[in-house]
Length: 220
Image (cartoon, rainbow, N blue to C red):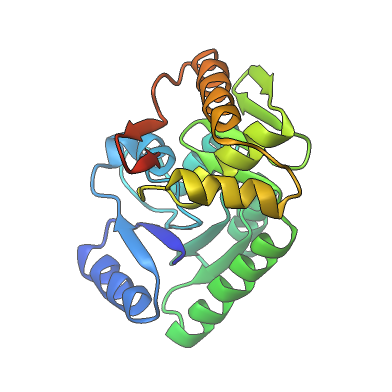
């Protein structure tokens, strides 16, 4: 289930939009504290962001500009502004699409679906909080710091992230590695988990891979 975050200060509109998206199979989160919008985005780690321009404290364009320094999450600007200048500025700042209010709900759903399909097809990037994980070249960046993972470490980390908030059994990780033609035994899995944790700690993320005794591992 894809996760969508809505940043909209019109409470009625945001609730209507949440209902629309929920009924169409999306997990939806609303931002209510506009003082810490970027932190909320990074913590929720959505698959797509619906961002209004006219919101309190920092407007949507400023948020988008700052967000692009830390995340490549797809963004659709949803706004009552309908000038070519606003649309051009949003796209130049990194928005993936731009739709004006009042919008046709079906058109919005089609645009959301198109972006998510494109991202899932071509992206090698996973965003987790302030981390940018490139599964193709095996790197993890946190602002100006970067670490390199081995192939096994990246397979394990990507699998855990793709199952975020779920307990992943050791057997599942072993199967994931086997499916990637990487034979690994139980002891080697433990070693790889330990090394992965050590590398993540260098980026300021300690204990994000939690061990659930007798069950497996979980990232929240």
